[in-house]
Amino acid sequence: MKFSLSLALVALAAVGSAQGPQRCSGMRVRRNAASLSPQDWQSIANVLRQMNDDGAISRFGASHDRLFSRVHGNTCFFPFHRRYVLEFENIARRYDPNFTVPYWDATESFRNPAADPVLSNNGLGGNGGSNDRCLGSGIQSNMQVTYPNNHCLRRSFNQGDSIGAWYAPEIISSYIQSDTSLSTFRENIEYSIHGAVHLGLGGEMDTGYAAQDFSFMVHHANLDRLWWDWQNSHNSFLMYDGTGSNGPASLSDLIPEDSSVPFNGATVESVMVLGYGNVCYTYDSSAGAPQSYPSGGSNNGGNNNNGGNNNGGNNNGGNNNSANNANGNNNGNNGNNNGNGNNNGNNNNRSVTSGSSNLASRVLENQGIQNSLDSDIINRFFPGLGRRSGALKRRGSQAQPSNCGEPIPFPPRLTPEWIHMHGYDPERVECAHKNACEIVETLNNSTYTSPY
Image (cartoon, rainbow, N blue to C red; front, side):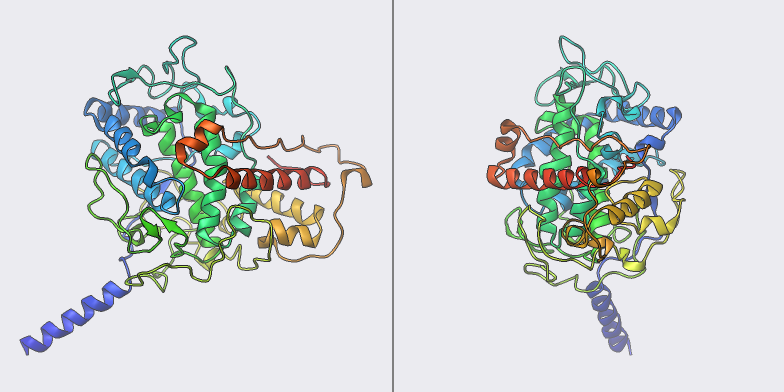
């Protein structure tokens, strides 16, 4: 009898393992940094000061620097940074159990980033001093760090006292909708908004140890949000294709770790699905955790393509009608958010595919694109919006509405130094940039009016 019971327990354990990580019993909600109050920012500042006094801030900077070449320029970019920001959040919660890393939607101020309220004295702070570039404002003002040597935390805007325009939400929307493989989506994000924000802020953020600036955490939380939106949009929660940190990508790969910030042997699969295992958080503008763990996960091994097509950083072809399904699992405020904000808002708007976290503007963006572009262009750049008929409506063909917004600025290029630092292929970077410029040019030449 005992022997039979033991066999049954072993069988149940095997089934549980095959089904993947267990669903979290409670979820915290990462909020848009733009929604934080001065009191929220002050709470974050208090935690960062304590962490820095204990050496944790510099440990994160050191670990990121030492792992740099293994976690950039390959598909491990997303799972590594998801686990990395989560580890920072978990350590911060030892000082304040209500701490949650907010995300900084850098597309909200893409036209004039330096004017973003998130960079105010109440938030992340602005530019560094004119002589030493030391950060003298914000939640890390006058902070001293120890890696790679003792120095002040630095910030140095890339255009002197200002920051050049970043990537418009519409460009990111196109990536989310038209990139059918994670390896392609990773390239487009890493070569665009990822690098633009790092280079725009400069200083600490333009180094391998950028994680000492809390801007790093809120920026990568936003990139993680975009990955989660992409995963939901394509129902591709477990797609992990292309090249990982040690060869062909596999869900069983260990996430690179450094002894100063250990992950205890975490695998790529362990972080693929929000709301499962130890990844117990969601985003206030995104779909919640799926009700059950996606199929095709545990013990798969090998290169997990899930039928994806690696188009290599240029999302300029093919129809992708799988986009924008949001997996049908939008649970709104899911579980316990530990006092870190409510996942309110219109749940239907959360399923609208967009690079923006602004739920109302998402609808205006998608309606505007549908009313301004012909079917071939929509199917090429915004396939999540579905097929439609009609010709491209150009600005010269009819009177412009009186509330027509300014043309979308063309996105910045990555610097040669940044490309070399990351080991990127310059030709692939240039290909991705040309594609982004083509998206902007197409929208600007139509009657489309950006709501951003």
